[in-house]
Amino acid sequence: MKKYYYSRQIFFASIIFPVFLMIGLFMWSIYGIWVKGMSPLYQLILITMPILLLFTLIGINNPSSIILTSDSIIFKGFGRQHQYFWSEVKEIHIKDYGYVGKSFIRIGRYRLLGGRYWISNKLHGYKELLSFLQQKIHS
Image: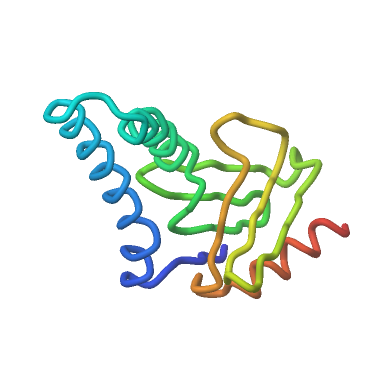
């Protein structure tokens, strides 16, 4: 079993802070509607922030840790986990965005809230994980 994780500072800066920012923007739009009335900006924020929060918290699109075992891969975040057994995984796609320091991983069959994950090069063992997944793609 191998565990890949972020340092505490990176975890707060890249995973927790954006959640608080989304919640803050949502509350700001409610306050703005209450005080100033409806505007297109407030409407946009009022609609998009709950959707983004749903995908962030339930879909774990930015996992805080990844665990590899001999029979599965587990993405963890926000007290939830998504587990994929290698025997059931038929496809893995990796798109490396090296210029921004992130990679996009799509694994398994399509699911509305899961199967798509962003990982940063700040993840301890990032290159090792990507190398392992690349091997899984070609085997």
